[in-house]
Length: 250
Image (cartoon, rainbow, N blue to C red; front, top):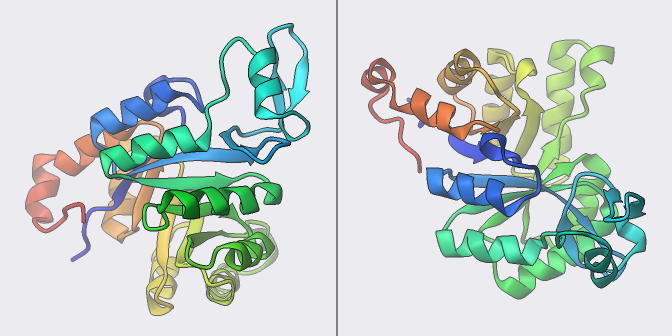
């Protein structure tokens, strides 16, 4: 029987702002297994938490992360931009894992260098990587694990079975340990193919308890949610626990 999926808190956890220390701290207080956030880098190569290159400045204008140094950004903003190093220090202190959702290939080299310098290759993994990005990440830091972000266009242009075959083949070719997929595409055939190929399957971003239950019963390896308290409650349901006595977090 499968263990209960790893609980991954998406940035913006428990309605806190995205890319904020409040979100991270809420996730750590709940005891999640993994914290996920989006990563970009500044002009001087500092990895920071951000989804988009555009960033609001204190004067009401918009700046570009990739065209400004960290010092310039922090001078022009009301609040400092959270750096990945600051977040990783908290992750390490808590003994947790972090999912680094890479939003631009230009972040790969500085992110890899930071992780190596901090000695945290076993406490992080990369996602947000489509095939070419995953291959490139493997060149920068082969010791850092990677999830393949599945090409969702293939699910519209190919049959479901063909799309599943392509996802697994691409993950293996790119040296990824698993695939990262929207939860809506997960079916038993996908689960069977993933296991047959020796891959993990991580799913995002789940809101409803019924979907959490279904995915847990299917045996996914991790569920990402902005509401980890709800997912923890699903894990602790009396009936669920009785039916799945060995469903524990590894």
